[in-house]
Length: 135
Image (cartoon, rainbow, N blue to C red):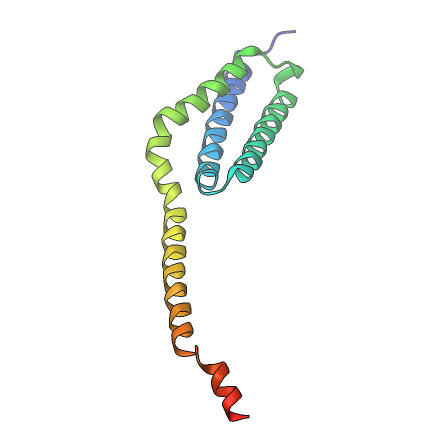
């Protein structure tokens, strides 16, 4: 029993698309990995590994006639590397933009909060003495 050339080409194309999708997932997880600590980075790495393993497993289960060849895995790797070297430099700054905006907002809130706390301390410093005097 042999698989038709069209089905083999479709399997290679699907593997290539899967690799490109995994590259996009890698880029989506990259900004929170940079912002978070070591534990968050490890958890996101684990999440990526589980997603990649599940994608390869599902691709293998859908392989024509139940056979997954080495060429499909190579095509998935090629799609991943194509994304990282060709598309990632263009898309990563766009994907990082919401995290940069959130970081700037958090910095601003921290600065405003410090100003508010210092002002409250300055103006309400003698409140305890005032309450004691009124009683």
